[in-house]
Length: 199
Image (tube, rainbow, N blue to C red):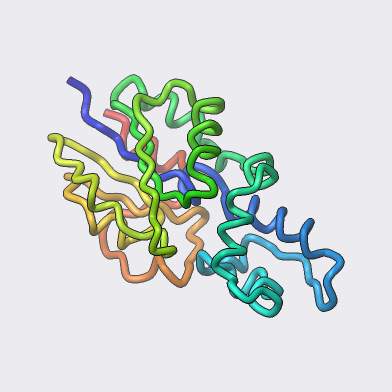
């Protein structure tokens, strides 16, 4: 029986920050004080630094962030990180592939459809609808199978499970407000991850 490889989706498999910034730039380009948003400035999940007009003009910035994450345009802009698709497809020969991702009510079904369309070979998709608005915590998925591996970009998610092996993904060594302080295994590219996990 193959071990299970649990993979986070946003900011692990796909470049969600870039897609979010693209939608923000389209939606806010005519606002006074607009400066184009870039993914490298996205240090937190509510985009305080990269997309400041959300926090200056919206009575409920969290609701606006969720709205953008739920737009079709967001999913139209989603792209795999370099090497992600090829690596996941290759690792499918050695692991059961499970996508384990947090979602909001606005984007959960669209996320499943995107995964089904772009990665039909995955074995299972687990969507955790997180109504607390922080997108953190996957402890309800215990990951107790022998040899289970979990890859995520958020240390709190890694710590919340019982996976046998936990690996932090930091694309190009990008440091954010939330991924500091991890002392376990980490990788900065899918090519490196493939080398670690190939059996």
